[in-house]
Structure formats: structure tokens, C-alpha cells
Length: 249
Image 1 (tube, rainbow, N blue to C red):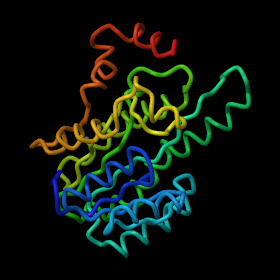
Image 2: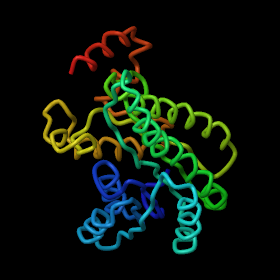
Image 3: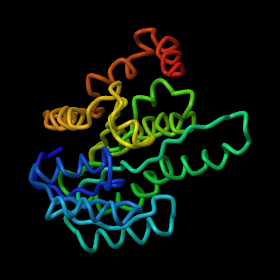
Image 4: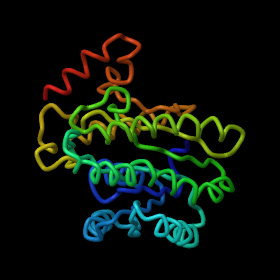
């Protein structure tokens, strides 16, 4: 993946990891578009970063995704990088049937959203040189967090899907790259997460991600040091131990 000179679309770009990635890509000399459902959050990114563009997107709506894809390509024909980052993470009690509504919303946002947007934009991306699709998964793709079972499952599915995407894109101009964050100081699960000392500082996470993306060749998996125990838990025989530790939080 080129470090600069790209036109990059970041979904879920109004807050958290999405916003921080967008700002880092912008600072590195790329044209950046952030997308998300909350107009106020997008406007805040634009106000703080002159030159970044913003377009509203409901990643759960198939028709909205199709219309969005046509609009963004028309407005930014140089688009060559898609960052599928939009996601939700909510706790679920699997013994309460009401959890199904949360599970369905999580699957629609975290898994179907990236699949649908990739499908809508891939024909265009294949016409661009040095193109890439970056899917943001989670360390929980490798060891689930028992309190967020559907979130963990969608990230495991997206990890698997990204591997297959990369294989099918061999011989094209498009790379498939996975970014798997550890527990990071964002507000994904509420304001308390942003100040939790157990979480990796957001700035540190972004700095390490950008350094990995700058490697030549770019790795197909971007795994920061704090996420390596999760990524390699099965190899190291630590899955049950780490699962129990996460569940005890």
C-alpha cells in the first residue's frame, strides 16, 4: 500500500479508530473521505482537519450503500483505498431472547456492511493502480469476549472473509489487508473505555499501525504488539486461559 497520494474512504470515520486513521492518512498526504451515520461527528472531523471530506452513510442499509458507492465514485474518481471500519459493540445476555435484536444489528453493521460496500466499490477499485481494501477486525476475532458474543463472531467472520478476499484478488491491482486492534482507548463501549488504563492509548495504536502499513511489502495482517497474544493464542496454547481472563473482566 502506498503511504501517500491515495484517495482513501474510511467508514465509521467520525469517531474513535476511524477518525484517528483518517487523520493519520490525511497527515501523510492522502485525500481522505470519512463516512458515517452521525452528521455532527463527521462535521467535527472536517472542522478539525481542513481538506478531509465527509459523506453520510448508513452501513446497515443495502440501498443506501449502493447509492453511496455511486456518489463517492462520481465525486472522487481517484478513490483507490477503502477502509471498512464502521462497527458496533454491545453486550448480550444469550439467555434472554431479546438479545437477537442486538445480534442482528451487529451482523448488519459489522459484517454485512463491509461485504456490501466492498461489493459495490470493488469494480471501481480494480480499475485503480495501487488499490487496497483494509478491513478493521479485532483481537476478539481470535479469542472471543463472552460478554459481546456476536461482536466477536462478526470480527472472526470478517477475518476469515478478508483472507478469502485477498486470495481471490491475487493478480489484480487490489490488496486485501486486515487491521486487528486490541482493546483501545475509544468510546466504542462507552466513555469509560476511553480512559480505561487497561486499554491501549489510541495515539499509540495508530502510530504502530501506520508504521506497519509503511512496510514493503505491506503485511496482509496488521497486528500491533498489544494484540499479538490474542492473534497467537491458539498457536501458543493460551486460548482457554485468555478467554477466561477476558470473561472475568
